[in-house]
Length: 302
Image (tube, rainbow, N blue to C red; front, side):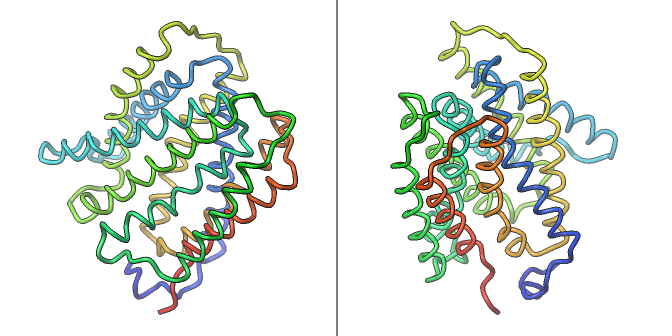
């Protein structure tokens, strides 16, 4: 579908419902990571997620007759996006050891703002507009509010976790810009891109776990295993297959405008499922970041 010719079309109710469902799933992902970290060392958990998700995708590829592995000419690009993908999840999983989910969703969903800034200098057709700049200022105000919001459930090193999740968002943004710059105009499918991210992230995350977590042990229970299965099956496989299905049928700019729902769902689920205390200042910061996220992703009028 030509996005430029269809950017003014309204999304059907089914597409809006699917996007809302995806945002709910992605918001719940951070809750599941927080839970699985209680029984699985965080970086090891990220590595295992890539291993199991790769295996499931490989089975799906064989079943549907899809190309799973990148062509030899594109292996260097696969290694690059795999490294960026791995570093994003390394800092995300590790950062959630120190801070709350209701704060983390604010920092991880700053990635569209870093994408917008980097794309302005790297991608010729992705220039900053006044609306995007305004959205980033609104989101920056939200970050300041979130950093200063302290609740009774926070640990002493919450600030370290906040910064690690913010670094994770920057690596996530770097991977998106790299994909737009080097991958999307080549004969590589979204499915191959996803498989490359997972496969090439495994050695990086495994090395990180061996270096930083060699003294930690596994102690998984039913709840920990259930949270890990959610990350692998629901998030890493099903949600991204649904996302790719949507972006092949509808304008990406229209779909991306709904991602402001993900941090809202994440904060709500963190409060409901993990009993995290959310002070008013954090709610206000969350509202600012969600509003900025909407402005940055809002489709421009033709």
